[in-house]
Length: 142
Image (cartoon, rainbow, N blue to C red):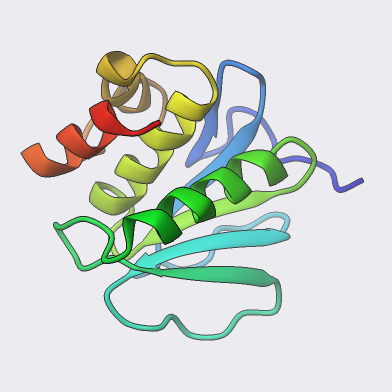
């Protein structure tokens, strides 16, 4: 079993179940501390390779995932693995796509879709989820 992230550390979202997920922007340096064991990268292009297990979802900046079924599968995998592993969710800036994905993880964790964006903005970053279609994606996510 892998040790989880440290609660209260920068960029760490605590879901209602207690699962911890790190959100970040890939344009910023890798934060100090333990490395992820699994990462979900949300980019319009393939991300650079990393030394931990990672999954890439094609997700253009300011838009929605290109393959919604693959996105749902990847988000469910991240949520499941966050119970016992250090999971990171990241895009270029760490707010729009990452915030949208974190809000979807909150929905999987029991937060109603209509409240998930507010939950992530309160517990992760006030700028999380940047566009109306990203907000709509979260409210319709199951």
